[in-house]
Each structure stands twice: as C-alpha cells, then as structure tokens.
Amino acid sequence: MTEWQGNIRRASTTDAAVVTGILAEAFMRDPVSGWIFPADDHRARVHPAFFGPFVALALRTGEVHVAGDGLGATLWLPVGDDHGADEGDEFAELEATIGPDAMKRFGMLDEQMSANHPAEPHWYLPFIAVHPAHHGKGVGSALLRDKLTELDRAGTAAYLEASSARNAALYERLGFRRRPTTLDLPDGPSLYPMWREPA
Image (cartoon, helix red, strand yellow):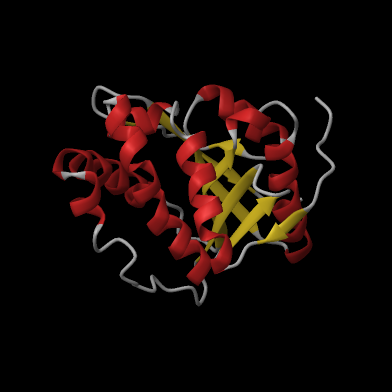
C-alpha cells in the first residue's frame, strides 16, 4: 500500500465538529459500535453525540490530529506521570443522549477497558478514524506514524485496543504487540489490547 503524503496537523476546538463527523461516519460499521448500538438507524442518529465528548476530552487534555481537510483523525490521551484523571463534564449528558440501553453496554465496555488499562506512563489512542471514502490510501498509517515518530523521539510508549483481529494486524506492522488478554464483550466482539514500546 502506498503511503498517503498529505498534511497532518494538530486540531483545535474549531475542528471539533469535523473530527466528530469523521468518527461518527468511520465507526458506523465497527463491530464494537454495532454492539453498543445494535440498531443501524439509532447508531446513525446518536453517533455524533456519542463521539462528541471524546473529541472534547482529547482537545482539552490530550491531542487531536487531522489528516488533510478531514480525511481522518486520531485522538490521543496522555496517561501516567503527572497526568491525573482530570475530570471534566464532557460525559455528563451522554446517557440522556444515547439512551439507557446503549449507556449500559458502553458502561460494560468502559469497565473492562479501565480494569485492563496499563498503569505505566504512555499515550493512549482511544480512536483512529479514516473517512470511509478514503480507506485503503494509507491515511490511517500516516496519522499513526506522525505521532509514533514523536513518541519514539521522546522515548514514550503507546497503547490502544484494536476492535478486530484485522485492525490488530495493521497495528502490529507499526510496532504494537498484542497483550495476553482480550476484552470479550457479552454476546459481542472482542477487543485486542496492544502496547508499543518506543523504537
């Protein structure tokens, strides 16, 4: 696959709507999102409201990167050292927005992810998304490499949970290694926690 050669930049709050739109569109067919929101029409309706708080949190406490004029985006959060769990109110309205059933399933997922999250300092990638119209062009790899190069220079590790074995294989090419446990959702898909030591 050829590497996409476009521009990657750090996003600001003015990019929040664009980034939220990329995530909402890109995750429509994601197995985990399909488990949280089983009905396609409900998922399409609430996805922007679901991803909005994550974008707001990353803009406030971490980094959001955008490829081109909105082809793809990454959300990065620093974990460990002096990065405390700085509680904001981003998620205060989430249940009212997505409904109690989806909130219950998201709560189960969040509980598993929190219980298995490594404690040592790293940057966490909760979401990487490429707009479906631009899949297979190397946009996602370029977005990842951009931040991983910086982490390598700083000697900092990275962590993510892949939402499919296929995605896990992509991350392995960039130096991530699967951890021994998977996160198995009740009657749903598995996630694959992955850790990357700095190169």
